[in-house]
Image: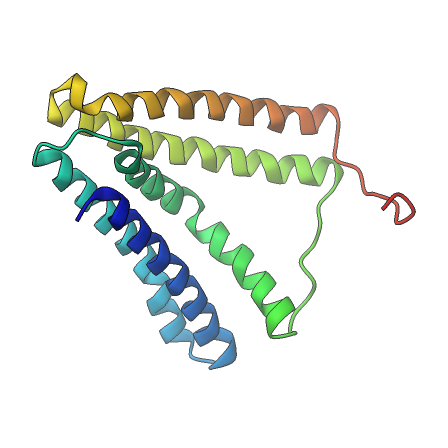
Length: 182
């Protein structure tokens, strides 16, 4: 099976695990079952990365699909808990109709929250970057791993742009919109 098929399967399984985890937790009131589904998420990321690595090891030329596997692991580790918390709050409020409405942030509070997210982005970049660079090193064939190097350079640019966006929120804080402006 090729890397793109593995990505599609793992991405579908990821969203199924999130939805089943939230449903188990809030609709069926089965906390342990919900945690089981959430625990599957990093396992799915590892399966995806191992499938991509095995494909490269067997001689395939790297594609962006292979590189995405490393990104998934970095993002899952860096953002996993906060993404589940975000989904948790919204599912509880909008679907189950329990709990407080998720808070919208403005001003310095928004800037600080975005800065924490940028820090997570840096962590995801480091993890994904180490996996990408490690794969390039292990394969020892630049012609077969060029896509991995290209993606890492592109991700570096995205990280710098994200830094500028984050810094802009400290200089020009996000303001609350008046209901008349909408």
